[in-house]
Length: 455
Image (cartoon, rainbow, N blue to C red):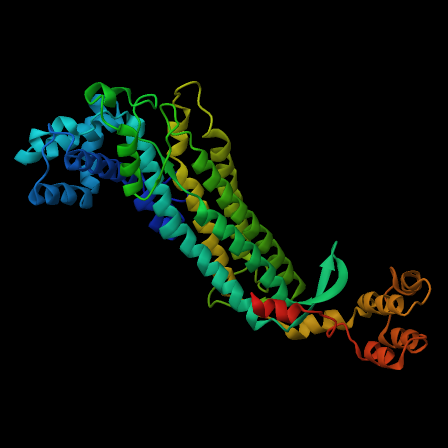
């Protein structure tokens, strides 16, 4: 069966192909190969630019341009050619080395030093650096932008509804009022912290040979400071140098990044569930889309499917991301290969994260608050004012205020008039009595409006 959008094994490459297209350039096999080529050429250029290596003649501007052009134009057909070489070598990184030598043989300057392609490198030097570059690009160019869109959308909702009173529900039961905007602002505050955690992860790489000791490097140039040279090389790629490794970079920074993304996804799951419940309560309506169907048998349905799809995708992403963070830092002695196949799935964790975010954004764009429904809920729950009444009673030394309000309201609610009668009989200053009598569930919102507008 030929592979197509309908026959793809993964929905990321089938049903949701278009929604995660931006990740393909980073996390596909072609994306990995393209980064391997980039690292190999950058290493060759670094060697040629170092005066201490007399055997590697410095490249002319023309030769540098040739190398840069190869880096810039690695095509899908080039990756296919490398895969053909791999069919013989049964080694993916060696195939890149051979392809580069063949592809650059026409340039006399480069051909003269072709044996310095992959010089003193283990495959992991190339791979770990490529993986770090892939993650950096995927985070900065795909994940953070869509997260920023969600934050901006939620912030706008928080500001728009900063003063719209809403009945809280703790344990699912009526509780002290808030505002719809303040509850959205809570999500924004959490996401801002999570976003900062994702962005701050310093992606590390190593370039220190077969077991991390520069053995081959020092065999060739024993008096050269290879550690400083390799540090400069890694930092020139925008990565953080890791000086202590076995054959592989230990992936601790990767684990930190995957955990940080999963924490952000968990906040988004929590937000999707709350918004789902607000829709269920009627606090939010969803804008209708012409031609859309909510149920195959119930014509009235307008389902919150975007938030449900988002929740499901964030859950899949977290299952994968947390496996990465638990597995990747583990390697037997100086090297085993269990990380290799796992790393090929980084795009799956990113893909479901981005897909979940896209679904959530679509859902957020459909939301319309229903002030009438919110007001009706508040007006039906005058018992929530038991809290301010008993608190003012405490201030003025009335005995057992909590217990009095508990007997009056717990498990049975109270009407507006009954509560007003209770307040009117309190032995408190008239000014305080008038303030309590003027209070309604909708006005008892504390600093909610201010907090929502401040986010």
